[in-house]
Length: 135
Image (cartoon, rainbow, N blue to C red; front, top):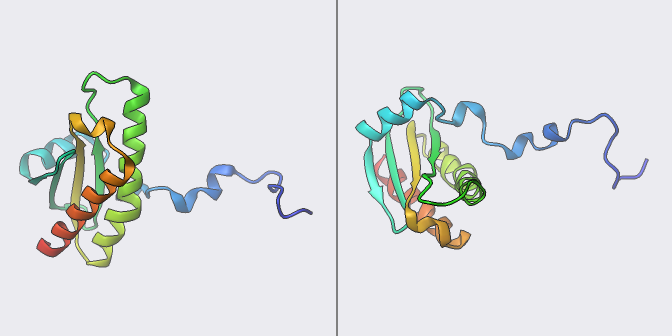
């Protein structure tokens, strides 16, 4: 069997399992998001509002809010995917490595729609450093 051909019957989503944000690491419920918006500390960058507070789930969790700001669903999904990727690769591993149990919520500001990925990455890394040093 050729190594470049996918195996028959293999679930393509199973191959992506390690690339996904684990379900237990996501803030999903509206009530949890509202609570975090009320009780959490807020840090602002040029393109993001970041809310963080101790996690009631005894592990670090992350979430994303991308308001419409008069943009279509394609642009919103594109920005949401970028922010989730930064949470998965930059923010969550740093929180876990520091032994912190925080809920962190990234909310895109109107200005976030037109910026390059590297700019968002720099801002998330800056937030990561501040959050991990305060935690």
